[in-house]
Amino acid sequence: MSSLDAYLRQFAKLQKAPLAHSPLTLDKYPNKPILLLALLDLIGAGYFDGNQLYLSPEVTDAFDRYWDIAAPQVEQRNVRIPFEKLASSEFWHLTQDRHPFTRVRIAQFDRQLYAFAKDPAARAALQNTLIESHFAPEVRLALRDATRTAEAMFAYSESQLRKLDIVRDAPPEKVRSQAFRTTVVRAYDYRCAICGIRIFSGDETMPTRPRASASRSRSTLAFGGTSS
Image (cartoon, rainbow, N blue to C red; front, top):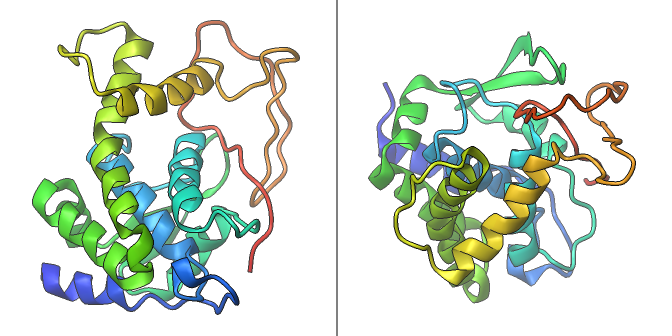
């Protein structure tokens, strides 16, 4: 069983490809630390059913939020690449199972790391290590602020989608504004509001299918692009 300190060291020493003229990411591609920040947010929000991690529109949105803060000048963003490349890390395990709808492979953290990710204090330590180790001081405050905002944003988005009063007090404007986009795109099942088409790309190309009325899928993959 690994200690939290052991995982903090592994998070600090992620292997990353060089990226010229990107001082905010210390001249390295930020794909891996950004994906881990996104996954930690979603684990903290209770998004995944157990230690079964997979790509989805929600993961892509969280990935993009961090990317926009840390690497806005870097156009080559692709959440699929770090999902696969993290297999070089001891704590990351790509299974042979595939998500039943997206057909994307499912990954798992070490069992102990997943337990740490569920614990608020340990999760905060993991997030802070990623931010301190892989990003320049100029963006660290904004990244920390994004981690603090994430859980409240997901909770508020869920409350609006389910019409449940799980957030009794009105959240801050920053939470509401970020949650608004999340709520709208999830309500539309990540489809075009005009034509109803959703585009898939990833490990496999899959056909789109008609939007089921009043359905909201959490298992849809909608991402693309290229990266190194």
